[in-house]
Every structure is written in structure tokens, then in C-alpha cells.
Length: 119
View 1 (cartoon, rainbow, N blue to C red):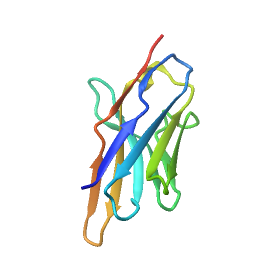
View 2: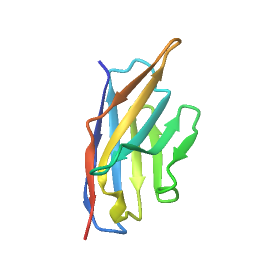
View 3: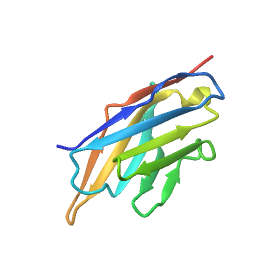
């Protein structure tokens, strides 16, 4: 059974930095794509950053230049380095992983880790 688990959330002041990590277990092949999403209270879940096995990254406009997604294949982890955090970055952050199979794609989500940007 594949599981992905986030860690690293917490409280940080505006302008500060935080690093989130996601660890996978149970997958037999590397994920085609990994990523981070977030959901603020009252809002829908939105994309933050994704990284494919080809090395292609995609960032939401709101985090470009501030957040960086990286991946460690050996450790089966992927991180989100968040710098210059703003109040509006407050949300629950979820990691996501995708497996591509010949006839379908399997998606796995973590349970989320909260990030609170406040003074």
C-alpha cells in the first residue's frame, strides 16, 4: 500500500522560511510526478508546485521565485522550500504523487500539514 506523509509544517512569521517534506513508502516504481498543493480555509485546494520525473517544474504564479520543489529519489522524498512567506501562504499543505500505468494513473495524497504565517 502506497503512503505519502508530510512533515515540517508549523508557525512562521511573515518573511520567514519553512521547509516541508513528503516521504513515500510502498511504491515499487518512482512516481511520474510529485507535487505540493494547499488549501486555505474557505478555499478550494490549489496547486503550489509540481515536479515530473523529467525534471519539469510548474509553480503557481503566487509562489514563483519564493518556493522551490526538489526531490530525492534515493530517499523517496520531495521537499518544498518556502521563503519570503506571506500571510496569504497560510494553508494546509498537501503532498501528491502520481503513478502512470499503461491504462490509468494512480494518485496518492498525504493528509496535510498546516502552515501558519502570522506575526
